[in-house]
Image (cartoon, rainbow over all chains, first blue to last red; front, side, top):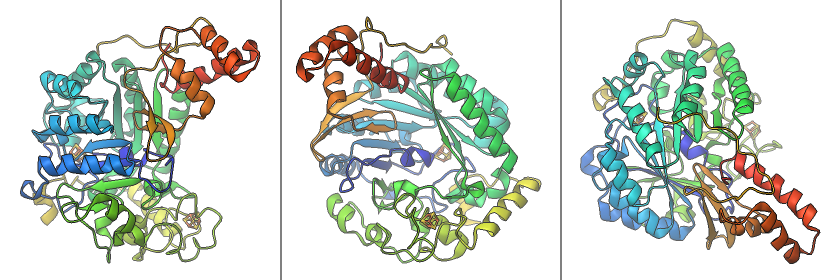
Length: 376
Length: 99
Ligand code: SF4
Ligand code: SF4
C-alpha cells in the first residue's frame, strides 16, 4: 500500500470525528516492493481479524462519523471475505476505496466487488516499463496484469486512480506515467514521492532522488495539471527531505484518520508502532469510539500541548501540527521534537545532507519486503 | 488501454449536469452537514451548492436550474446562471459533476 491514500483523505469537516479509516486487512502480499510502508515486523495470517470483527468495526466506524474506508494491506484481495467487507461498507454508508496491487484480481472478482457496492479502485504501478516495474516489485509479469486489471476497472465503469510511488529508480518515467494514466482513462493519478517509513526507510539510499530530480518532477506535474485540467486530477506528494516545512502528517495526529492493523490494533498513523511509550488499543477489547476519544496513543500527540520549541511558539503549529512524530523520532531520537523536515529544526541541515549524500552515491541493492528479510 | 483520451467538459446553459455514479452527495448525520464523497476526496458544499447539486439529475439543464433557483433565492436568473455555471465548471474540473 501507499501512505498517500491515508494522508489525502483531508479536510476534516469536524474535529470531533475521524474522516477516514485505513483498514489494513492483511500484511500478506505477493509483491515485495522495497518502499512498502508496512512495518518491518509484518503481521502473520494467524493473528488477522475475522470477517465478523471487521464487519463490526465498519459499523462502529460509520456510527463514529467516518466517511471513507480505504481497504488496504498488504494486498487486500488475498482476503476471501473482501466481498462481505465491501458489502458491509455499502450497507453502513462508508465510501469504499480498494487500494490494490491488482495482480491477483480477475475480471469476475472485480465484477463481484462492484456488485457488492465498491466505489473506487486504486492500482499501484512500479514503473511504466514492464521489466523495471517487475524488478522493483520483485514479481514476474505483475505489470502486464496490472494494466489488464486497470482496463477491467474502466470497462466496469468504476473510477480508477493510478498510484505511482516515485523514487530514483523510476523517476525518469514520470512523463510516461502521466501519459499512461490518460490513456487508461483514469480519473486520478497520484504521483507520490516515496515517504521514508517502514521498508522505505530501510531502503532509503536505494530510493532517494536528487534535489534536481525532485524539482523537475514538480515542474512536470505542474505543466501536466494545466494541460489536463478537467481530464485527469493529479495529486502530488513531495518528499520532505528537500522541503523547508513538514507535511501535516495524517492531517495531524488523531485528527482525521484511524489506521487499523490486520490484527486489530488501532493506530493514529501506520508508522506509530515505531514510537516508544505508546499503548495501542485493539478493536477486540474496546469500542472504536472509546479508542478514538480516549486511547493513550491517540491522546499523546493530539493537539499542541505536547509540543516543545520550536513548535510550541510557532505560528504554523496548527497548520502542520509539528509534522511527523515518527520521522522526528527516527531522526532525532525524540518524538516530541519538530519534524527534521522543518527548517526551524536543529536537525534540518543534517537531514537534508543525508538525502543529498545518498542521492549522489551509487544505489545499493534493494532489501525486498518479506517476512524473512525483516529478520536480517 | 481500452479508451480514447478524454476531453475537458465545458459547462454551458444547455448542459445537463449530473453526478457520476462514483460521487455521492450525502447528509452526514455525525456532523449535521452535507458532504460530497469522491475518490480520495471529501468536500463540504455550502447551502447554495447543495441546492444546485440536488437539482443535478442529468435531465434538467443549467438554464432550468437557474430558473428554479432564481425563485428560491429571489435573484435575477442571469446572475444565478452565471454563478452556477462557474461553480459547476469548477466541480466538473474536479470530476465531481459530469455534463
Ligand atoms: S509490497 Fe508493494 S504492493 Fe505489497 S503492500 Fe507493499 S507497497 Fe503494496
Ligand atoms: S517549528 Fe514545528 S510547528 Fe513550526 S513549522 Fe516547524 S514543525 Fe511546524
